[in-house]
Length: 393
Ligand SMILES: *Cc1c(COP(=O)(O)O)cnc(C)c1O
Image (cartoon, rainbow, N blue to C red; front, side):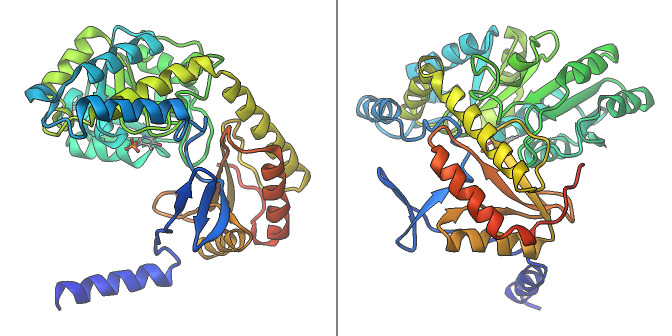
């Protein structure tokens, strides 16, 4: 059978299981978004603070391009590490309150690079079973033994650590779980890891900018520092509204990553103008703290309204508010019904989420209005028969 014939079979199977993924072409402009020339309101972006098109961020990007051109022209260790990248790293370290930070091109690459640099094939890597795919892939790339513990369960981690055959161990967790919106029990996970002499890494892609009074993320919310969580990964393409990622930690950790993280070493540095845009976004996290307050008010309004409607909410207090539908085909139908009504909410299906837990991943942004949230609630009420009863994981 030819390659195409084999692939076509595989695609047909996906289609049959309602697991076929399709991209929608968005037209975006200053006055909103359109799909097939119909105006839509999106409830699925990770632009939680609404910084992706903030005039100051756009202006910094433009000025950066004027000064540096577009491409960085080389990897950081060759000659691609400009003043803009360096200033951003220093500002990220100061923002997080750690000695150093290191830029990566994406969060996916940061996770792959960090785990593979710090872990050897003799190590156990312990991960929450609902961790982001990039953290799970990272352990596999490192050739380490991946062990997944029950979701957000520090006692389960402790039991795994006690049972492990090989030392040392490495523990990695999402700070905010990307498809569930709940926050990891970081204090308890940190205590368990420390007691066992295991390093703890937190991927706070969805916490940075959003959680904590100052937007420093889930560690600020839990009052944890570098001793509790020595390895912190943050991404820049979510609340910061730009693109890329960083790792923050000790001087020694960062030097070890510069020497050993292959996804850092063997890739072109991101455009310097992007670093300039991110510097502007980082300043806005402090300057426009009202965005976090607005976001919290929107989350509260959504949760209150959804509870009144009896919609099956997950226990999330973050801007990620998934509605579990269960069946993949019904999740797709719900998403399509909402799009008919001008609301874009993506259906998330296996393997991104566990079998039988397909969902609408609703996300809120400081840019939304109460009226838009109310409209979403009204449309969800109209399609409520598609939702399964509440499910707790
Ligand atoms: C989005 C995400 C990533 C990947 O970050 P990118 O910069 O988009 O590659 C990593 N971890 C988590 C938890 C994420 O949600």
